[in-house]
Amino acid sequence: MRPLRLLAAMGLAVLGISSAWAQPVLVAADMRQQQSLDGPWHWSIDPYRDGLAGFHGEPPNARTNRAADVIAADVMQAKPRTFFEQDMQLSPVVSLPGSWIGHSPEMRLYQGLVWYQREFPATAPKPGTRVFLRIGAAEYRSYVYLNGKPLGEHRGGYTPFAFEVTKLLRPGRNQITIGVDSVRTANDVPPPVTDWETYGGITRSITLVTVPDTYVDDAFVRLTPDGSHIAVSVKLEGPKAANTALKFRIPTLGATLDGKTDDAGKWEATLPVPRNLVRWSPENPKLYDISIDAGADHFADRMGFRTIAVKGTDILLNGKPIFLRGISMHEEELGANPVRAMTPAAARALLSEIKYGLHGNFVRLAHYPHSELTTRLADEMGLLVWSEIPLYWLVNWNNPDTLADARRILAENIRRDRNRSSIVLWSVANETPTNDARNAFLRTMIGDVRSLDSSRLVTAALLSGREGNKIMKIDDPLAADLDVMAINTYNGWYTDDALEDLASQEWRGPANKPLIFSEFGADARAGYHDPVASPHKYSEEYQAAYYRATLAMAAKVPFLRGMSPWILKDFRSPRRQHPLYQQGWNRKGLISETGEHKLAFDVLASDYAKREAADSAKR
Ligand code: GCU
Image (cartoon, rainbow, N blue to C red):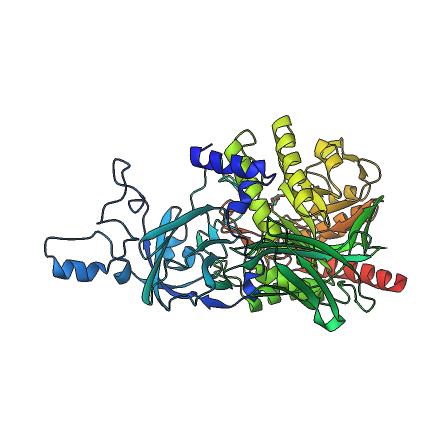
């Protein structure tokens, strides 16, 4: 482990928390006063990373240092013998957020470092306030500078990070420079090989967030497991964090709770559930405005209240058994050339296909934390969410730096989203090999989930074993540590099973625990039809037959309590290069990249419509 990080981690570990909390949380930052820095940015590629180091590894010289607080053209004009080998202010301009694969055709397959820079006007922060620069997500390593000063770095492509800039902002022209390096190593989370497009670059909003000197940095509000109380946990940051009076409110319910932080700036309290509180559910996604007043800070958020639990093989939402009628989804907008620039309209288009097209009540946001736009929309529309971090396939389970990064990314995800009532499952892994190092690593992750959020369920997408063609076995040792087991099964696609044999396959797993089929699917190129008795793989008819056969198999699994088939929409994957059927896309979508419904869409939709009708008859 790098020495500086070791010291930081040891210091924080003594407090019983991972190094995740070296960064400000700025929970519900999207609800605070913000100055958007989205829009036009200059960009400059730096494949050999000259902007980070000279050719002997020394600090970059003035010629290549993209973050220097200078107007390069003015300097060259004034000093004839001075020259630069880059000029951010003269570099081309693109609109952020959005991956660089959309900047120009040649950036389609670029993996490396790209520099972004823009200027923005600022005034000196008002007395008694602080300003943070927040980046919603950047894939994969970020190096952030303001007015030539380094603010810090971040690793991880899917969680927000922030740096305080209060003392560095200056009245008038300010210059922000961000270097983003998409190259991942075998020690990263995820490692280099995944089945989705990297989408290097800055993919979520960049904002300046203003808060009072002492502010609510972290807050977690939820129903207690028995549903009798609302639990409130608050962490203040700032000079007056300790021993400060606070007031929690739900104005429309007339609920208030007064309290005071301890010496560490923390407050934990509960209040009896207001009689007129309406529980959140997919059928009635009731949201409430809440507020926390602490000193000069008026913290606001908008959330639902519900309970989620397991009892034997049942998943209970608000105390009642529920079947999760879902589908998996990558963070990739509809259209022929997505750049991973999720907008409210783009997220709504996708979630509406699930909620209204498929009669779904559940979405697996694979394989990494999605935009907060999407999780907030799931709250609003009434979709239950599986949220996961990208511990995917061949992670370096033996590397302590990898574990530290995974723990930080998990904490960043949970602390960002644990007030989203739609999220009911935190998943710690996808299709990882079963060995002792992986089991120990993932058990640490499961422990972190439980200490960060004991109100939700823990799961992981596992692989299954089989005995011949009839018996499927859930024999992953990690299943014992999960609240809900989840299996990715592709019998009849990646195996030679005849589709007519699937319905007679029997699933055996640890007794008394619910199961979700977290993936099953088949590729189909939209428009390729093969209307014969035995259609060929890649045809829409085969995909539809595969869904009918797999749903027939699923209907017979007595402890199955949910499905999130793979996947809503065809998505970009460099691993999928069949020139006729894939062309760089994974085509297991029920809709094409442009939203064209394939035959299998209606097969799943009618299964879910029947389940929905049966469930509403029981209510
Ligand atoms: C795996 C994996 C997915 C992948 C899918 C596929 O289960 O979890 O990320 O895209 O299978 O092969 O299409």
